[in-house]
Length: 636
Ligand code: MIC
Ligand code: SF4
Image (cartoon, rainbow, N blue to C red):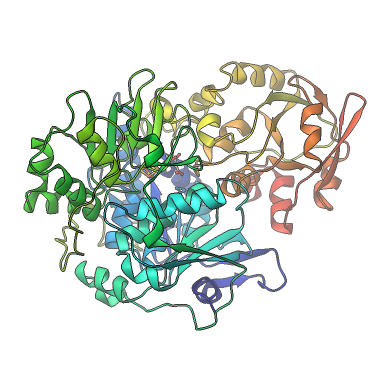
């Protein structure tokens, strides 16, 4: 067996991989972050369960930490009170970024982790099957329910050789993205294997599995080996180690080999993580801003490397450089070994250990600026500046370019050895003593920004539908439900819904409400790979609130498709992609006996004027039930 088969096999509760297209798996650990967590816990509350039922649940605060106005702080208080009541560990703002913290303190090889954040697969770096999903799926897992995934196809990414100086894990995952792109990978799991695996430390492996999210795969995973054991032991968690490696002759559905020794420094150019160019081809381009950090590249290994490159030097005077570490542990280590002093002396702005710049919460670049960043997404406008050109690069390339003021590859520095002992300080993880048990009768703190969760309504026959918007290919959840300045409304669906599709068409909200008031059901028409990117279920929940009942797209990405179903929106795909051209915004659409179609094989004949358009929703029996009754909450 390969690593994926071993772990999934041990967690299978529904379905047979040889026969079924959907599997139910038991979830050991869950994580939430504040921007998706408030909704997840509101949904969990409405399930009426007295405490969390899975092995470990952790609630992190790392996204909304800017706290302009009362909203973010109110959310934090709500999350803390929910954690105490239901037996969840609460990680306070300032402790660090959820994925880095979870890897350091909780991730266990051979277990399953479900997180309400698309970069949860970071845990794959430690041999965990770690999957990103919408908040309501995490709520179900916390209540002891299974999580459903498409029966995976497993691709072996065989690593051989050793990275040359100046290259690092980011260049490996950018190579994988160059080969496989950001679409067309739904349903796959990428398993890293081969002799090159042993040359990568756990933080480097986690960089690779983290950014596997950009491929659109279910998850990515490394084996659990001696390197994993060393990392866990250094974290004082040697007892969590189990060895999980593929058997000799393990079978895979596909294979791709990367010779690490032959890689060259790469960059993802604007505006997609799949738009790969060599750093050499960008050499000499002026850089205005360099941002180092995010859950992809904020480990001690990464920031220490940057400090070594900066040692005794100063960043170019017209470049703004920001450093955001992944956790307090990382900051403490950098303070202890003098790296922090080097970074300050080199002219860096030391930022909070939080998501910050990555989600456009601050540090937006200037108009038309070139920003080099070590994070994982460079969608148009995500930085907060639509005209900015964001390039995703390794910490090494970022540091060398910050010194030069132009893009340049790094000559490298002494490799950072894996620490023998990490300094452990869990004091910003609260409610550890009540974890799994909770505090019966404890009060929940609810500020005015915490609005009730809306429920969906059952699918009806005989409704009139209208194409409320038509968008193109690769529409990300950042287009559908922008974050940045709007992030503070995550706990308030009526307010947040005002910004659905804001970057594409700011009139969408008003149009939908007018259609809804006129008794029409709204439909979204989209191109390829609709709903790329984040796990934010608000990209389905808020459209549901605006009366959206169906999406018809050329293709839909995994997490977003699951979120649509969870909120009772029909995820339809054109049978013939050319029909996309036949529908215009504002067209009236007729769906016929839609209930019968959904209960049957999911094939729908949509009448648009004189034309019959064929679309299909490939749904499992479980998914059919959800769509028919108006979503998961409505089904309870
Ligand atoms: C992201 O990187 O886009 C986010 C913000 O972390 C999202 C979650 C969210 O929208 O809250 C993700 O990756 O799932
Ligand atoms: Fe936070 Fe960015 Fe990671 Fe999302 S990708 S969890 S916003 S650091």
